[in-house]
Length: 186
Image (tube, one colour):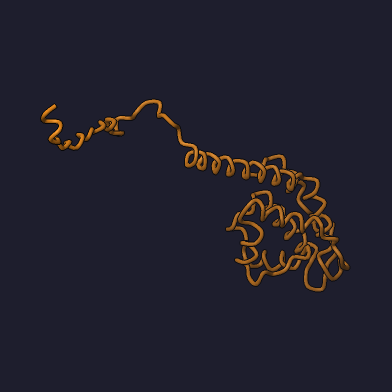
């Protein structure tokens, strides 16, 4: 879960239409609505139920992202793991926001990039990934140690562990010795 301070830094203040220029197809209010939806999506840690087709279509045309064939492919590429989210944020933050705001969402992109950068979201995801990796690796180490370095003597047998006595060595009798004539008369 995204910390409240980061979520607040992403979402507040809400983006207002007067910050943006209209395009031939989209109003400043459309740009602000998309920006607020994107920032809310990130602040809520990218819930799948909020990743609808209209949102995807706009996002896949911003920040230099490509469509990844469909809404499911885009979501699976960028939002199913912490490492994926880091990749999305790095690509978004690294995008130079080219284009004329009268024809693109570049004015909105600049504002969103600044907001994400100031929020600390990328650093939080990087710390989270470090913790996830360490936890996973420690669990793997424990499994491998249990497999390859078992305890030489169990501390106390459990009730379900049968106690098996040590095997008793069986001595084999010496083969009978054949007596000779000389043994009889000596």
